[in-house]
Image (cartoon, rainbow, N blue to C red; front, side):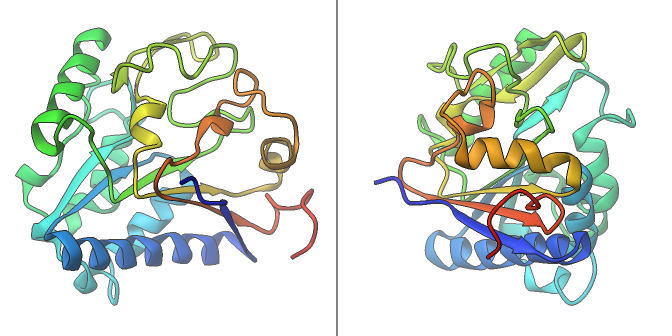
Amino acid sequence: MTQLPRVLVLETPEELAQAVADAFVADAADAIAARGAFFVALAGGTTPRAAYTLLAQEPRASRVDWPHTFVYFSDERCVPPGHEQSNYHMAAQALLDRVALPERNVHRMEGEIDPAQAARRYAALLTETMGDRPRFDLLMLGMGTDGHTASLFPGADPLADDDRLVRAPYVEKTGGYRITVTPRVINNARHVLIAAEGLPKAPALYAVLHGPFEPQVHPIQIVAPADGQLTWMVDRAAAAELAPN
């Protein structure tokens, strides 16, 4: 049964990053206690970077059982892993290379190879490591000012090719291919956490939460975990057009 989303408004970007980091720590502890492992899909963006930096520092770093944590990515740009625009590169610099996380536990998307091949290989990796219906304990997302999430952009049906786990869409806005998990993977997660900050996100956030359901206009509206929790964490600026809480 789909649960109603939680919308948590934090006063500042710093408090937002702290809340995201704390959710990571809590979900890791719960998953490892219940099932012996924590499967997490990371997102790119400013807020996740700040949260990853906090996770690499005390007191949070020692509160995560890193050897039992398995890291994946919700999307990636088609660039080499050392490229400044790579989500993997950002996460490695901010977090992955700074904690006791075994290298074998990190599963990046191969942005440097043919996009379609990279998508097939990542889908195969998901099923090899998590079974036919990959289920993340925590799947992290952001939202663009246009209502996109992961690499699901406006103008296309986000459910296209949803029989796949991963696909490589051509994104007109950026003039290139991207690699992304599909709603099939997103909506099978135990917990989906969407973080958004800044006044430029306010119109999209209002439209997504209170406007008509138009996922071709605002693809993030397709995010609705079938048997899990959806949490929005936003700062006060991004929530400017929402009713005061």
